[in-house]
Length: 339
Image (tube, rainbow, N blue to C red; front, side):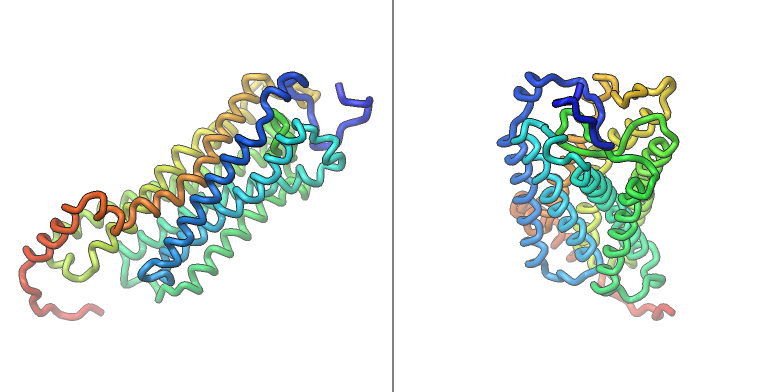
């Protein structure tokens, strides 16, 4: 089963693929093109963020952390995938001690979980800013970057668990990437559920907080007294971008997270004692992973396309509508100051 009669490394397991199929599937140019598209998109978004009117705002700082994470994720994992496509998925020859596989597995978990955690942090920031503006402490870009660093450390700690004995990283079909193992061992089940539940909880928290924020913002729009006390254009722009990021993350990641939870809990297990998954399971995992990867490509375009300057170029009537709304507002009256 293994070339030259050599024993496989701990990260290698049998796969439903022949040498002929490997040569047919391997496409370094396609993998490189996909990676370049994502890197270019994130660089364009970073450039737009650098030219933003208030680049040091808390929300834009968190958004910059999200785009930077997506860029680094595509750069690190994409380079390994392209190299393995060029080598026709000969992982055992290139990495007999599985060090590269363990590194890529940890990177996949880290760069996969970080956008979900950052999305939840951005939703929390907007929720407090819109519904409890007097409760929020002075938001600074240093505190926002500290939040980004804290979430990076949390995701890194989770990604290192298999290297400490909880779960395993193994090569996945067709042999171009490494990820957590969907096996029946207790460690594999525990780590798979931990990853799926933490990612799902982040998406669920974002959905809940963004829903409350949008409802509150709609009420503010209909309350002229409150509308005079906040820059409505800026609030709406940030919420539109945040809802777009949430929709993209949900559509891209939830299928994979649900699939992981279902697979590790399935009885009888889909992985044989030798470590081989069912062919259908291997193909499904690859498809869901590719869908999840689109999150790193679509995230920057949410910010690029849903800026006020872009929307007003695409729909010039938006400017006149906002101007008309402001002209319709009655003159401000003296009101008692808040606490």
